[in-house]
Amino acid sequence: MPATSPAHHQRRRRRTNRLLATAAGLVAAGALAAAALPGSASADETKGAPAHSGRYQDVQLLSFNDLHGNLEPPAGSAGRVTELQHDGTTKTIDAGGVEYLATHLRQAREGNRYSVTAAGGDMVGASPLLSGLFHDEPTIEALNQLDLDVTAVGNHEFDEGAAELARLQHGGCHPTEGCYTDEEFGGADFPYLAANVLDDRTGKPVLDPYWVWKKNGVKVGFIGVTLEATPDIVSAEGVKGLSFKDEVETIDKYAKVLQRKGVKSIVALIHEGGFPASSAYNYDCDAPGAGDGISGPIAQIAENVSPQVDALVTGHTHNAYVCTVPDPAGKPRMVTSAASFGRLYTDTTLTYDRATGDIARTAVKSANHVVTRDVPKAPDMTALIDKWNTLAAPIGNRPIGYITGDVNRDGTESPLGDLIADAQLEYARKLDAETDLALMNPGGIRAPLTYAAKAGEGDGVVTYAEGFTVQPFANTVNLQDFTGAQLIQILKEQVSGANEAAPKILQISSGLTYTLDLTKTGADRVVTDSIRLNGSAIDPAATYRVAANSFLAGGGDGFPTLGQGGNDLVGEDDLTALEQYLTANSSADNPLAPPKADRITVVD
Image (cartoon, rainbow, N blue to C red):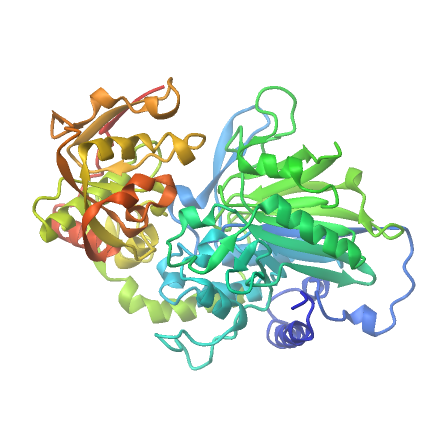
């Protein structure tokens, strides 16, 4: 189906009428007028706008990525960004929350009649309870009200499978849980693009591969892809029946299709990212010298994607950068990412040349902006959050534990990682008393546990909603048998094979210790002779009972040996394990202290 289908036009017209009818008192009329209406006629097109003057037209591209259903301001470090000061020092700024994101985007659009808003994937999935409890319908509603025009799919859009992604796009009530409100879920008013995600039965993309924004003769095409390695980081059930193709080859293919259709200005929305030299959102990664540019997968993609593509909006790594990377023809091309969780948005100016229909690359300007919390909240977003919070409150506000201070997830080994691994070990021993240890993937820990009260529950109280935000995937706790040799190999896979370039250090339960020597390379970074369980060396020939979540137990995150265990036993979900651990090991009078995170000795 073409990206600008009549059915989608009709939906966009319904959306426009609804916004004009209900939001007039909520945002400035100028912002509504400035918001682009892709795929449908704009007011000046239908009323006989005057002839265009001038060859060049600036198009505002607003973009963000990796929202992950964070409608409310994220807690702790997940809700802050680092800003580089003129004197070389840094400061942190509280950021995020869709009530503030809406205000910032609407203010940014004021005075920009040619404005389009795009996203780089992972809008949903791994979401806090407010969205995740309702299969992310609240986030889709929020994105509709944010006037998001188009997004790529990310890997997390496949957490619940292609059928659920199709429901988020097209609407309809959940197949097992039904409708959450009196109104049937309407789906996304914006297209999800999945150019490199093919249905194995048909060989065609599961959703539209591209979409074209049009206004007064200006045309900009958008191609959306997710990382080819999505099957390695999503449960096997979520990607069943799907194939994920090479990002560069796919983008180049559809760039040619758009060129044949007369669309020469092209933006790629790529759910894959990189690593800048600084964590500061406003760091100049084009500055000469050490730290220039970005590293990681997106750098290679940016260097190889066709010169026909004029800009790359990226994501996945949750980093912030605005960089220029030379295309294969040697021309500089903008590559951007706006961190994650709605803490930043990117404002890019694309100068459209009416004579050629292409973007004048030398005129492209871009910058990341903080979604500060010192602006008025958008009333329509507050109303949306209140509506869903009312439905979630009976479940989410229930206390499940107590802590003495913040339990952070930062670092090679984190206090929260240790806590979760201990929780899974204690839970697993209820299923099988012979369980020896537990392993937890760091990517499955989505937020810290914060001491400060978030919703009036009291300082130090951990609610079910907060626990859900930490572990939202509903993975089961699985028990498997491994030989000691396999266990050593699993630890070495943290820093070798698929994980050699970007190590994934598993969080480990109490009793397991070893040394990680980062001065070495590859598998040698895990010092074999240092690995101990309860003080004893690992016996390569012995059998060890290991607990891990179902994602890891299937070999996910580049741990193929974890998929080779035997004597499987499947327990309940990992959040249940965390809840039971906190309830059993803490109380209001005796709260739990954060673990010391001293099980892995790191040599730099």
